Amino acid sequence: MAKKFIRAIFPGSFDPITNGHMDVISRGIKLFDELIIAVGRSPIKNPFFSPEERVEMIAELIADMPGVCVESFDGLTVQYAAKKGADVILRGLRSLTDVQYEFKLAMTNRSVAGIETVFVMTTEQYGFTSSTLIREVAALGGDVSSLIPENVYKRVQQRLKKIALNP
Ligand code: ADP
Image (tube, rainbow, N blue to C red):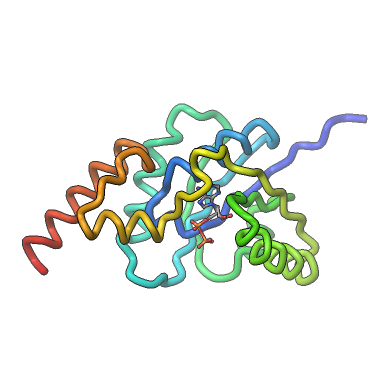
């Protein structure tokens, strides 16, 4: 039997993308033929970057990764997945707390749209990395350079300078 082509989406807010997300992406591309990183446009609490800026930074990071692309989307993840003809939703797990939330989300998505979710566990090193914490720590002057890719770190620095000039 011919091997089925599998397209996955990796949805999230990615505000900003972290080394933890990059770890999930590099594991995901080994499992699927095509991986679409899907940046949700729905509003989040205290956003740092616009969806366009988040897409731009991710595009720089995946430029050399065949089979990986990035887009933003509005509305429900499952509707976006159906529109893209995706077979699978990819999500990352850091801790048992993630499992509780992700379990509910995956069950809901499966019951409303029949789509499966595949989880990958992050490397231990990034088990505590979250975009929310990075935004908070960076805003208070903490050094987040080891937790986010270099291009993202530069943009965070620029954003903080801009905020400092126009509080
Ligand atoms: P959302 O707002 O949808 O949770 P995020 O951008 O915070 O969006 O996360 C997208 C996905 O990436 C989620 O499955 C989340 O659990 C996973 N993720 C976030 N940070 C990490 C990390 N450090 N290691 C592994 N997975 C992560």
